[in-house]
Amino acid sequence: MSGTGTITIRRHIRDRFTFETRTVAGPAPGATPVLLVGGAFQHKESWGRLERFLLEERPVITVDLPGWGAADTLPADYDIDFLADTLRQALDELGVARVDMAVGSYGAMIGYRLAQLCPELVEHLVIMACLTTIPEAVRPAVEHSLTLLRERRMEEFAAATVALFMCADTSRTIVHRIAVDRILTRRFATVGADEAEKYVQNTLRLLSRDHLEPEPAIRTPLLVVTGEHDTYTPPDISRRVARTSTDGIFALIADADHMSHLERPRETADLFLTFFGDRPVEDLEFVGAVERTTAAPAEVGV
Image: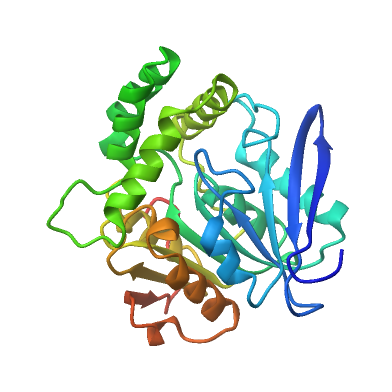
């Protein structure tokens, strides 16, 4: 692989499940790659402008783990440890010894668990719109959306899922709200049967329990951030996870909700690269409510 923008797709197998990685070369040979793991219906090619902005400074690795995109469906009874170890295997097979990692929503606990179990692999970890389980406040709506999807009532499913993921309060300023709403509505309304089953199984996994594990203590520098208007995974969830680290930071992205990587991709990329470069995120004008862990980490569940 040579030259900025060169793309390499590789297929892997974990047990009987196939999955894929996608590596895009960056401008600086030897720079630490940024590894991205996303959420529902987010496959390895779908990072768009966020990926392009990151590629200005770093190579980028994206993945379709089992249960995502081009990978095989993963039944709900496979746990987060399985997915974290699958990610470790992929990095080993790619010959990648260190990454700066950004994960979001459904992918949040996979990245967190990898940093817990393999701290030598993860130089910095950013979690966006943290999801450790499906929050109680939205469980009925999530379960209803699964019914709509299984019955292939796709327009209703799309409307219900957009309503879950995006803040409905139009008095709150959210950058590119209308455009993102249209993109998501179209995306969710056209989900095929295979992708629908992956979403069902991933959601059942999240509904089963809280996946934030207390041990071992996470020691990787950790930034947990979400949009200030996120109603699907409210900021208190991100704050709780940040406090599990002795080197944790909680912050909010202004004028965004759960979909900040779509609403403010330039700013989100700048936030990642600032943190990965060990520079203060407080200096970014779009970042607010920054809290740094200054004492012993909180117990999981606090």
